[in-house]
Image (cartoon, rainbow, N blue to C red; front, side):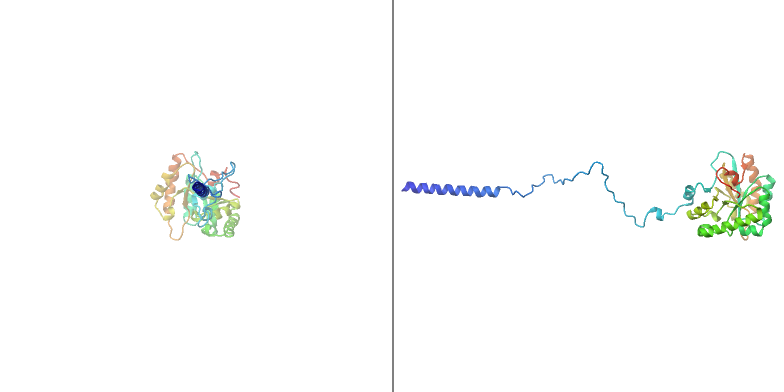
Length: 292
């Protein structure tokens, strides 16, 4: 009897042990849906195709592109329109061009013409239409004595402030006057004050005309004396230079220093081996039909 009780107790204990072991096995078994933790904490990315360029987005521009807002300097405009604008000639040949703005008048222009005739050198005169109308004899004398004529506008307006239609009207009016007085017009133009912008240059270029600037400024329009004008010119002289002076001035403007300086400047440069030429002679290989 006692032996049967012990056997029953043993069986019950064995069953309990088996049940306890099964519960622990179930609790310790891994969850099939659980994703193992990445020990290196690295997020794997799919590699891009070998020949595919990465997409780069353009940066946001606050007020637009540089092309929309940046203003071109005169120097940059000259570089861009090198086939239309001339400041000097890159040449080793010792040639130089004298140019005179704002004439003709009845006072300074004849005296300048006298000095040029005395030394037998040509120059280029950029004339204002209203002055040419008042002084037709000196306008004709400029051409008769072998000088070039360019135009400086009819009213000496700052052309960069005008519309293309207004610019064309100014230039056309001067050419009509030149044709009537001298028998020929011109396609060389010096904008008053040397003021240029892309729209002005595009308008002049569309006409088949050329813009002539300078690289040596005498500053004679400030009423300087002979010595100061010579100091402003002579140290800057080089082959192919274009010198800016004036043959007429505004009310009260005195160009006596220009005339006196010119009488010394010409022989000094001739002694240095320079030959004086007109603008059409200087750029004859680059311009078409300079004197129309």
